[in-house]
Length: 195
Image 1 (cartoon, one colour):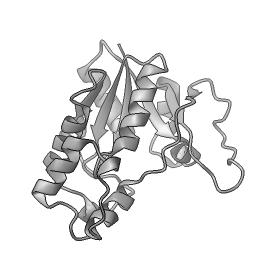
Image 2: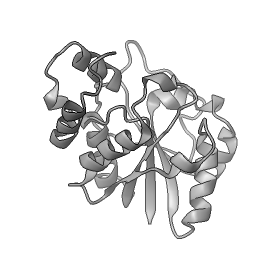
Image 3: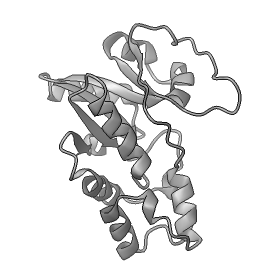
């Protein structure tokens, strides 16, 4: 199977994440999307993250009605901070029957050359890229015409987990931005009430 790996802290997962993942699996040649919950991104402060098990629960609730979307906690048992190359090598060893592919936004592609072992990733894996909105002209990257880079004409989602966390802390009703069960879990657990 061709598996697309959608990495994120999902703090929390929202309808934008789901829309992108679902579009990728329905309108590309990918068979499944694994939503890989990152315990600790090298680029984010850990103190702002919900506990790993809670974020895994939120992703599980969000994806349970989408058979082609799967939550993955594969990175929970890997050394932290997590680097994508290490996760890819681990997954290839654990699931040799699958072909793994990366999913990333255009904004991440612009800084992809700063990733650990990015040359190895480009050699071994395909990367499916979803669009972002830019204030000016779209920046040209060194990867624009690379044979392993596959732009996907997905809907552009301008929703951020940071915005959602701040809105909850400010007692705003943002239920439409979250899957129903995710909103209920966050509300019951009193998550993000303080930012």
